[in-house]
Image (tube, rainbow, N blue to C red; front, top):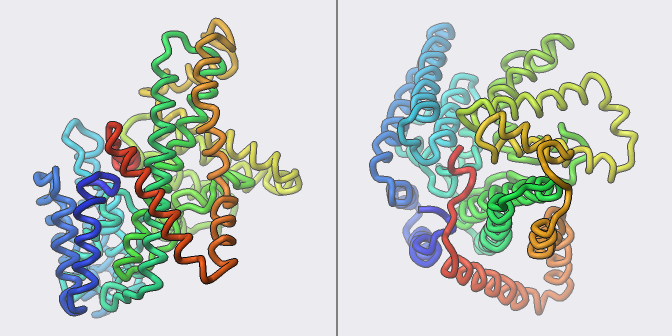
Length: 450
């Protein structure tokens, strides 16, 4: 089951929210666990056992690590942590980098489990004495498939004392519906356009540029749409998660881009890899090494082919260059120039996501500059651009905060009309989204494959 499926939107979503709001507080977490396991097992029951084994193993490992640390046996606690981390990574690699069927969300729930172990070891949060708390933390259905990767220390108190309010419910509902709109009406439409361009018999330079732009926009609206839906759904259920995207395509540097894109993953690597390795505290050489390690690991986390490793290296190179060579000069450039530079780096990087191998990726990059194509423009180019220029323009507008600011201004300008206005807007968005899902082939979320 996915958050954009008809089964979820029409049945699971309203029923689960209603049950959680009606059930007494002391039983709510048990209900959430049942719903989370049902959500995960729907369509993929064979992978539920692996998820439960992961939860039970990490619960036991966390107890042992925490108990040893409390008794002052820090070295034994560290050894147990290393063993548990190695086992988690080993299981992840077996499924992710072999021909075995990839369990849904394994990268995300494994990183959640590792967050639990790290937070217990570093004393950021106590080991969970109640196994149900650990089960809910790792399996919580809004985030189990595609994140965000919420740290254990940031969620455990909310698990023990979830707060469901009317204001939180309405705020979460609006965020959920806006995310659904981004996924169904923008990302899926951009995906159709991208497939249309890729299916052309003859690729031109202009079509190579168009396909790169379409995929880059599709990936953003697909993943940020899911994040909005997950965060909004969690908020309706009494949990407050930090935002996962902050208009990344308006960033003025690659470093800033990665503070705005998939924020939870970047924060995870910073807290559990970069800082423990020494961060920037050991001089330029240590900083360079740590950045390189983080970016290689980030690439490996995303996929099993060399494309993803190279993609991580690609971004790591620019982050390192900005930090050590031209970052201050970049800051002095006009904002539009810095944004164009950042987006070009990001868009070129996404080529390694949608091409099957490094040869295909470099071939596509060559096409952007005329290599391997007969011409820059053709009748097919004119057709594809005329068919898709409107959705591209709309997508670029929604890459910034303009629409949200206009909505908020309209809502808060007249309090008497705000509720009715919001209800009408989101009812229309929901209706169009459902119609779009019914009238087309339903697509899963792109990051569910990572």
